[in-house]
Image (cartoon, rainbow, N blue to C red; front, side, top):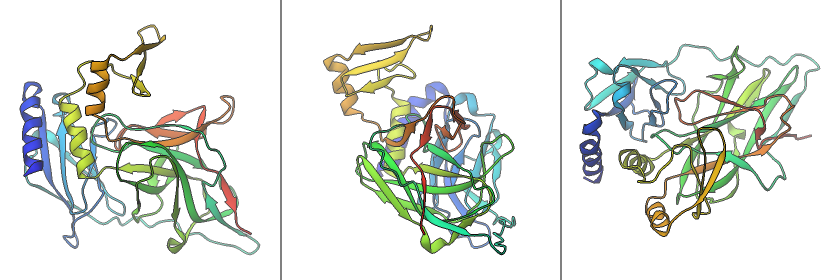
Length: 329
């Protein structure tokens, strides 16, 4: 009942802009089992969401995207693209076919040592980072891992949460190949590694020993924020009813100041009024902020970030995901 009421309210607001609600379930074509945490959205945009644990999903399509294609992808399954212009947008059942792609096997030749250890262990306590503040899909950060002629055996992944405004949230650990353009590409590991946490600020450690993950090629370690149903609904409400004083690209500092860049690229900082502070506190966004640490701008670009699960990757020249590999001898 709550879901339908909220979505109805969102649609009433959105009708002025001819938005479209697409709802349905994502299932396996082979088994008809629901597919949880599938990525759903419009490629190269911030329009995106995830399927819930029962495979269900809801996504609002902006009016300027109604002629695009809606993409569905899940770990271990082939992607599916559906034209929004001809799509029945209610009670849609999307069947994904299991991927026939064979993952590269790690061949360990004589004298080639497996370097087992933890990726992400660091003593850095302060960090900057990124979070998604638009759309219904989670953001992600990716750290390049050079392997060279060695073999990496990943036993644990650690990453830093700079701030969280949620009572609990889910993060997914992914390992992706390096594309020709040096960006994160296809997944090298086809199982969901999901961690649920309530940490507001601090380290999260994910033990992946049981998966026996080994790589003999360069790859990207990706940390992705998975939105649950409550977070998705809050974000939908925010998109339908933005703050009355919101400025695109603005950042709230300590709930007292707002910073943004003007048309000339100059950074502007203004004090929030009591009314603005009250409005902001009443509409705190569901946010998780993945930490990174500053690097020398002259160093080799090391990490990428994206605003949503279907958004394009942005190369980050002066930060890296807090992730340093430590060997276990």
